[in-house]
Amino acid sequence: MGLSEDIEHVAMQERELVLPRLDAQTAWELGSRLRAMAAERGLPVVIDVRRFEQPLFYAALEGTTPDNVEWVRRKCNVVARFHRSSYAIGLRDKSKNETIYESQGLPMADYATHGGSFPLAVAGAGVVGCVTVSGLPQRKDHELVVEALCGLLGRDYAALRLAAE
Image 1: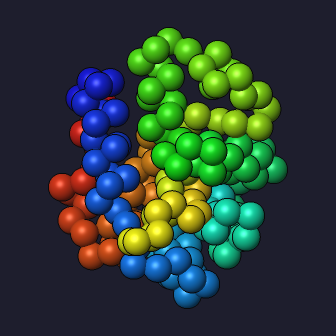
Image 2: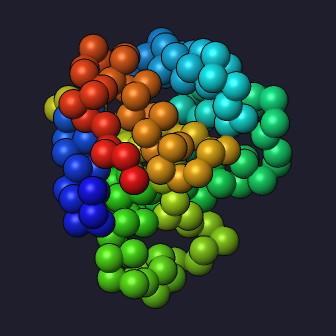
């Protein structure tokens, strides 16, 4: 799958993966699902689920470092700013051969357009938060989140996943 196909597919993921609500219980279920998936697979990731400015779930698995915490913060900032996944914004900038600083004037110390942070949209309300994973290569961070959201929402992950690189 090429860059333009990935851009279109990620946009479709964002349109399709909409929650009926985002409350503490939903955040716990999503975060717990991600943590169980990561632990079962031995993945060294940090997981963060939040309504913007309000953390609802956080976990750091064995093998993570304080640097992963910074990646989570920077990726989440992208979602909060654009209401798009950090991977979508990164793919957009890559297609234009730009950085977030060049395209938006935003400091890379505070914004990371690497995969792993996904907007949490609520039906009838729009994007109200994000779920973020850090610790894997960016496409795998993104896809882990998409897989967990599919499981939570009862969606077919095989139909929504990105094609293999």
